[in-house]
Length: 360
Image (cartoon, rainbow, N blue to C red; front, side, top):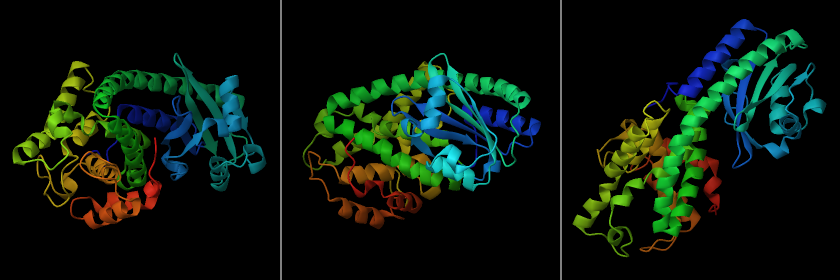
């Protein structure tokens, strides 16, 4: 398990840079990196320094709604604010949080690489007028290092995600419902992971990899005959045994892909393999393939199982109608502590994202 450990390459390297910045500039109380997702046009907190007491951890905002940040992106300019106040920053939640936390001055730098806009680096101090020209010139050198680290990590991630996207498309060719299921799975898993990450000492990078990897949970079904996957009635003993092998086959397939692409050092590949192999383990030890129990089951697999069970219940399948949302939520409660991790169920229920079925 990854709980309590920061072994991801990008997170660890950015943390080292942040620690050096705060050692060299002790008046800087907060260093944060937010990455931009060009697909969703969202800006998400990726790294926040411990001195910031969790402010804006796991925070995301549509860049178009953060008007002055979007202007910095468009003009490729940095911004120093010597005296922070609401009238200067605007009324967005992230702006209000910065002011409420007592920060008095800031330096915001858009980050660009060969592929275009990557995100922002934010520096904040609880004192006025910290960011002189001399200080910002030195900080800009650190920002360039951060940009290079982000680009390097994104290139590695692009290789893996390209392979994963191909596998997902293979799954989608078999069943249109699978495509929608995978999208909802990613969303539900992300919401649970966001709620639980702080409790387990895990960061935004881990959350985003859980979101990325959740749709690959059933990739092993590629090796299961269609006659079994789409059988309208109950599976017999032999068919059930074949179906259950998909968890092991999926983990083997993904391990081969990682090895063939030379991505053994890619962050969180173990999380991917855990999801594929262990998403059918039961909290009480009654699952498969390894009969793991409780916290022996990797956290990512426990999260994905809750997301998978809920979406399976509320989706129409060839062998059953869709359950009403409230009935499915009640069933999740009944499974907590039996098949499902109670913490994951609680996080899912509290997020309330599934209170209405998401059409994605």
